[in-house]
Image 1: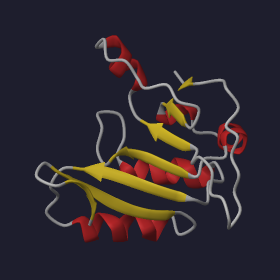
Image 2: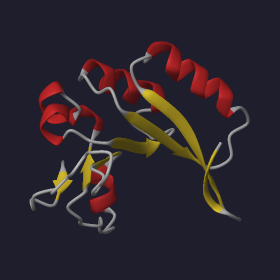
Image 3: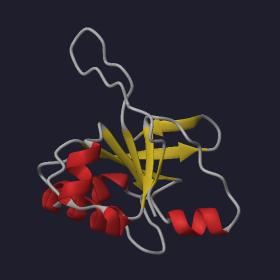
Length: 133
């Protein structure tokens, strides 16, 4: 179930004006909405399930960055990195997580199987908010 605003993105991607980023957020959209949670609607945000990650979807959306939780009930960062690579995505992918004993291990594992993707782990720290690890 893809959730996206149908307004044009108006993306300008040159050195002088970065414009809005097109952000793809991958997760369990059906569960989010079934739990009564509303998803923010903005022209630069698209929410999708992992099984929607196809070459056509990635080509049409052309995301600047992909975000997901590092682990979900349906997939983990490694699964999504594989799906993104198979769909032809060659951009940034950031997996969000609370504390992780060895984020470097996850980073190395994902990067080893998805060399074409710029992957990193972002720790969601309760005391200081979101921070790169």
